[in-house]
Length: 404
Image (cartoon, rainbow, N blue to C red; front, side, top):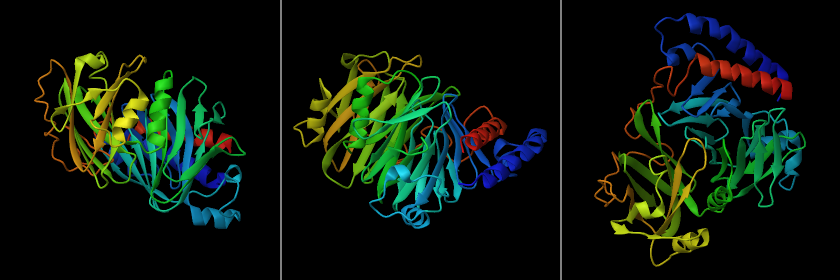
């Protein structure tokens, strides 16, 4: 990507800040409409978009990616003169396709790429970024000058920032990811596959690596996350599998209910990430699938076996050692079509049937739970578009210019 368009975008952003600040009484979304640069600022995740790139993608105030650019496979291979067997490491500096912010919910933001991809940014502790390729795509993730990227033995890429934040880049489905010749990350994501970036502000444990493996190899079909934002519980969902839809509701402080609908009958793992159960041990939780109590799994291999047409569904709990305590409850559902799952404190008030899943309108990639869900960006101190996020985007553009 050439420097000139980026410089122009930076100037447009800089010029827009003064009227945005002076617009007394204007909502953040109204203010941002005066510029081609759009910005998102949530509880955990913030970034901006210009006409062809996401810039300054930050998780818990640490910039993980300086830029994200997407382009169709055919366009990149034509413009760079490479074939299907070309070296992925040599795929650099292609022109990103046009991007537009499609919607902003309470727990996520969606960006549409003209090349046929959808990018979802999920506002939770892992700051998960998902590029969903309806047609084959190339994705380039730009690194800050102080960040590093390395390919791991399992074929994923590990990004480390200067403050120790780590992000794992992996392809779910068909495709590859590599560190390119410029030290950035390039991925070739085939049609109906996904690129997933999962961040860790604190320590990345061996259990985290096991969870990543479940996601990368397709065993984990979806993730539900429950968070506190501005004093209320909100829920969001991520689908890693193309044939899975999930709805979720935090019924109370001690219970989460989910409905998972899959076109295929084979079992899958569903991850529930929440601070509600951070202080709980496995013995303190009751997990039910279609009203039946699920057994505890003692290992990841036992969890995988349960998802592989096992006799019964099983679960295990993975607690986080971070300052913001949270827990992942991994539920292996042994077979599908539509299944209900409930997770509750053993002393909680849930009726345990997992049948209450809200309005059921979620299509799989985001769910606002008890939030407004109307696409409004909210106030300046919550998720949405605003001056502070615009300032972040200016920083991201400057970083990208320096990197290039």
